[in-house]
Length: 452
Image (tube, rainbow, N blue to C red; front, side, top):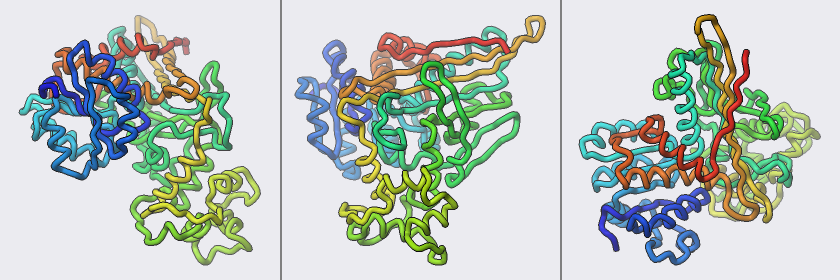
């Protein structure tokens, strides 16, 4: 076992970690690192490490405080790839045990509150180091700073991200496959959305989110539908956009996703708070029935659901709900406490990537800029990154989520990132070096400027 200063602990070995782990193992000999990967699935850990001599796999229940803190105490950097609910707990453990913490997840406000303590202990807690959030911040901030340095005034900033099947993968009616944490797919939008458009703040609760969509055209790929993503206004200060009239962060999907997912949400099937006994003994049909008010009429459950949702009983949305399995007479038969558990199981099985399929990720920035040099001039800057996975192999989502946090880990341990406290990657000390190496790894943006 190496010394603490050379040990990296990775918590979680899920779908988004393959490129992260491979990158660090590839650099372990050069930097004399030792990599520990801990997950509840020991076989998955072994698969990720593949017997590398500078690694150790550990089976970990993250709620086992003694084992968890012992692992953190022997590590210089902890990369937390667990879901967001564990972020504060791991951050507190890292501060108590003298370890930096890096994560691809959105920054929890409770973690942001640890900033003073992290500075006091000379530790860095850097979140939002994935794709979206992550590369979107870095590339967006680089573009924004360049515009400002050239005397430009940004009047509108729109940023979109997505992980999708490549266009040739058309194996299900929703045009979507699971390439990352299925819980995050199911619960996307649970926090609603806040954004600013033409100077007016707009708010959307979860049950309305997928009704507010618009088209985004990308050269060579066609038209996508976009919906707002979380709280765009929380990034105004970090991105230097407090005076911008329009600021929107959005998610892209193939057309048709949102109209179906809106009904899944409205029915109440994306719900983690209602716990139900003996769900495993019910059929999927029984589960769906529970969410339809008793006074809604109809000769069948399908008709009653259509009446309740106000949709065509023989239309595309109902066809998609049937295809998902919501009216199946099969017994659920899995260990489930909430309908969210059941839905995660359903979408994992229904939205599978075909054996020789590949995914793609898209990041897109659209900036409307004014220059007054000396007369008024306006332009639209579009900056687009498209990256594809390898058919049957490494996914684009694993690469674009894992590499930014892996590269940041290397930069932190080699003394090239001096920042301490709670950070997201909007500081040039982070994004300039990370973007430079991402470009070497083939993750780069194409830019087009159009006069308005």
